Amino acid sequence: MPKPAAAAADAYPMRINRYLAHSGVATRKGADELIIRKKVLINGRTAALGDKVRKGDTVELRGDGPQKKHSYFAYNKPVGVITHSPQRGEKSIKQSVPLDVFPVGRLDKDSSGLIILTNDGRVTDRLLNPEHDHDKEYRVQTKDPLRESFRKTMEAGVDIEGYLTKHCTVRTTGARSFLITLSEGKKHQIRRMVAALHNTVVTLERTRILNVKLGGLKPGQWRPIEGEELAVFLSAIGMAKRAE
View 1 (cartoon, rainbow, N blue to C red):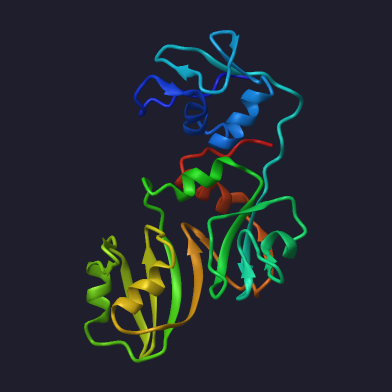
View 2 (view 1 turned 90 degrees about the vertical axis):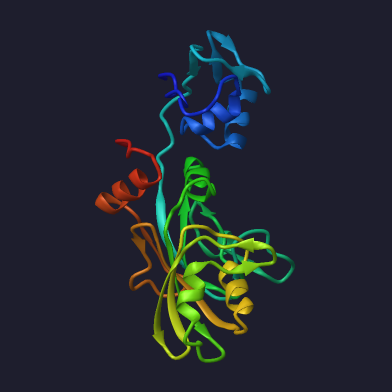
């Protein structure tokens, strides 16, 4: 297998798992697993956990047969389904979707809409890392009518428990509804922003992640992301589509 591309933007020396993650080989956890399986070489020597890569080092991966075929899906998470770590009596996405994939990111139990499902561990950090600004769009309904200043206040940034949210784009679609596009994803961010403006979210649905749209998917349905849509998505998160 060829050596991974160097993570040129990072300062050396860096831990080997971080180097592999930034080179698009695997997540840090996945990189650790490769190291434990003795699949990683630094300058011809088998790497160990905690080893550091210095500028000019040669990092290689030992091959062990054909590379896994990566799959990507758009899934419409219904209200009530848990993204990760369900408690007793709760149902998770993994229990709902008979595919060998995992969800990237989260939507809380009371929210619905688009989740990316994949078996490609490289996607997680590249899509969710707060260093990257990746657009996500949501459709929201509120309990009370929106104030006249609502859009301008939301777009300028809202103080949620000491954190000022980044600039976002808001378009009101009714007396109690709006579309919002965020480039960040703090926990329960939209609900907290709306609460800070003395209102309450009744329904929240994610409709788009970058170029991938929910479209006509009904709750609980999924579809493959492929072709031009996949190529644009992977390019947007800094990954080139590999021939498989």
